[in-house]
Length: 99
Image (cartoon, rainbow, N blue to C red; front, side, top):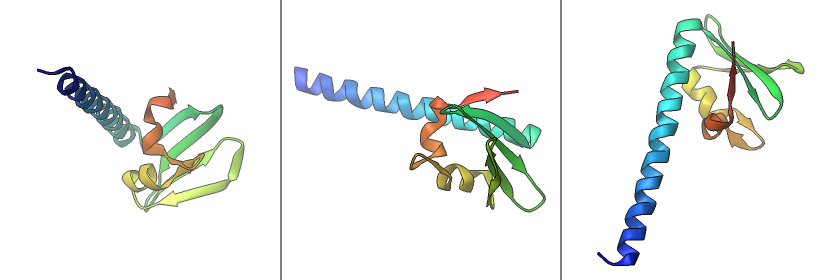
């Protein structure tokens, strides 16, 4: 195998492993949310709370209590709620869970 082919294989393998880790992080977060119906985490020095209500999922930052964002589902929240113009889903590895 040539060096170029080996490096391409290695790059693809690293990308696959990264996607797998993110997928595992998301599944763990989703399972935790489904059990407790509430998640608290820290991201970029702000504490956030995700809470399941009767008909929606809400997220708010601790210092901005009046800025309550509502979504139809946890999945929609993870895709559409952004912090520094990045969806929450893309920041899973930066989230620090709080009990």
